[in-house]
Length: 309
Image (tube, rainbow, N blue to C red; front, side, top):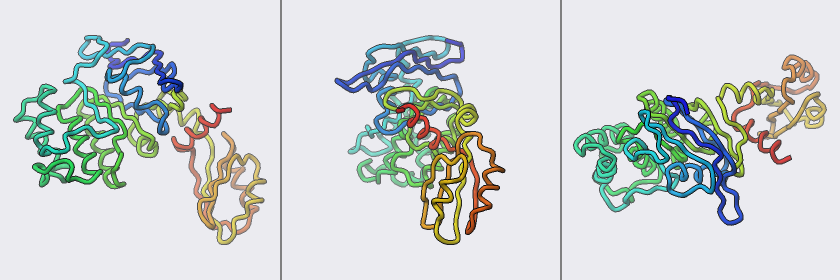
């Protein structure tokens, strides 16, 4: 464990009856990381996070936390922020009272907690509702309050489980900014999500998990370099889509119909784009072509497919 490693997880496993929720996974976080734990629902993400926080026990493996050079099996509560997937705030108490109480039991002075809470409520357009009860808010606004509660005490390490849940697209983008802001202020972040297009905007490193098993652990740059070199073309046609001609293109791996006159064509890795375009020039009726490489979502689906073979 290096001096800058804040969390080291080794060979972690957990089973529930006949379900292997997590199987022999290992990863580490360095100070200043934004580390994304990614996978579909039921992949083992939340189980892992609950083990990290000692909410449930692992069957095997080890966890080491390092705060200020002191290595422990359990993190000090004042140094940790936790946004659970399922909301856990007091629904029948005034919002500001709940926020101040939760921050104070993590070592923050109540007066400073109240000031900071009102600043966050103002930022999230909820200052005028500070004295209302949580149950009066919409699902999206409840998620905002839960987020404030998890980071109000300025933790050194924040675990955010599905932080974008219940948020509309505008607020999802705002939350990306808030998470970046926290990170710039010194908080190391471990976030768990199945919304990969949002996560790839902020994560430094990613851990892809499916059915409790590791598919990839490394930087975004490495995953794009090693697995994202598949040309993908979004092709629009002026009339009917010529499916047979598209299927006969050399190197075609997959064709997905996007609309009445648009398809997404994925080619085998490292196919030459110029050669692809020359072959497409022989097909009549193309109105527009947009080229891009595999997204994190595309890469994950391909990894799952390969893993199951």
